[in-house]
Image 1 (spheres, rainbow, N blue to C red):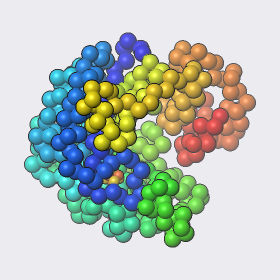
Image 2: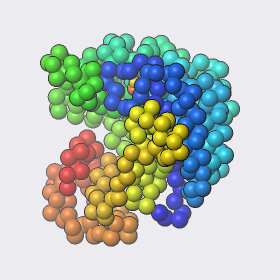
Image 3: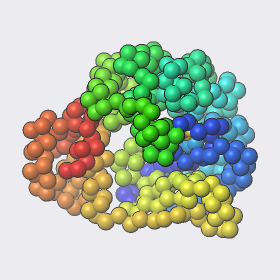
Length: 376
Ligand code: SF4
């Protein structure tokens, strides 16, 4: 690890009131387990107490962290401060469901120094929300954004989904228009993907509905990028846009930069010194492991230099800042241009990447097909 490098801390709250039919994240609806989980989480933090990292970001994700009560959230923050070295002015993000965000919860979040809220809006179109089986309405989404602003949040992110069968381009552009009207500092626009085991994935495989084809997905992507850039957002990563780079997610950039991060809670992943490890996925197994005095780690992987290079290239080409040849040589001991000359030239000819000032950049079309760029 670079000595100057700061780390990110991620906490996974694996509970939701109901499962959205497209969701592949680990979460359970057994909310009666929350108190046992929180006790285990506190112990997990104590187990990592002597780490030398200095953290400048904390991300409380899930699941639905906004299901927790104000005292439960406060206890988590107290435990973080007790066990980890947090830098001054850390970025502290919480993910929230619009249905949970009343004024009193929002005020408590501000009091415990949460300074960034990421609200899972997904769409302002009721038809789309129903198809996705979200538990909130468009009206609740609007109230949640307004209440967050009113409480004093100066860094608000909205998550949106496109490429939903119940949605046409007009519906999507209308959702973008409504989102931009609130001037959120950050927008994440994800293309709907259906895991094979999810209820919607099963219905899709049974032929109940069609998903948008490649061409239409491309149109969604390009229209999104153009619409938001016209609205003065920076398209800084395949799915992410910010109103200036100061609002780009500091935490998520650590995942794309191979910076160290520590993940706590079921299924959370960690990375440090070329090593990646992840926790037990099941909340019950997680609690059992911790109560037996063990770290709840399911598996550890030591990445070879070749794996690191490939990851760095794939992740770098998903971001607007691309990949610096010098940084790549220093960090991964590889002359990228010499190694991949033929492929780089081919992708340049196809207009998918460009080279400027010693960096390899994805073009807008390149960002749209970032998964294919990863194959170089
Ligand atoms: S609220 Fe989020 S984490 Fe929970 S089921 Fe829905 S998409 Fe998944």
